[in-house]
Length: 148
Image (cartoon, rainbow, N blue to C red; front, side):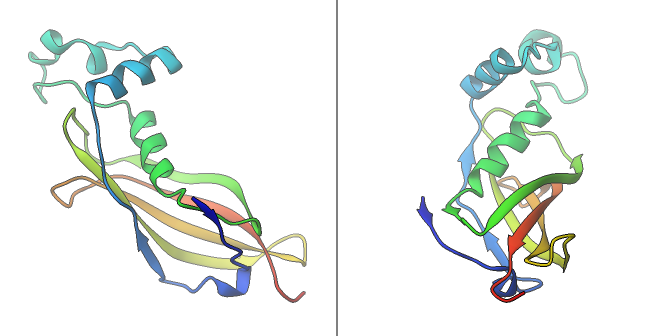
């Protein structure tokens, strides 16, 4: 992890970056359940899940989001602030042993309420080892302009 100043003008529409992968483990399930209190059987009960359509435990969507977004945090941009996430969707289930990575595309740029800043939308896709998108969302940023 390192610091890299990227100003509003430096973001180019359709620029894309891809992260390294991360394999999801049973420990991830247990730790996330402990952090969130979400001990639903869909995530924690292997025997019950064997009787369900997917036949195995399904990763918490919030865990896939947290890990997938965490993978994107390879550089610290002191010129940008996260405003949040929009359009979050869990597209496909993630299972123990799946490996996910994130693909980030600069989707939109616009004006901000404050003239010294602009807005940038990063479209995030979290993808499994089969190349299937498992989660999508838009990351909203407020980014300092070089000139205002």
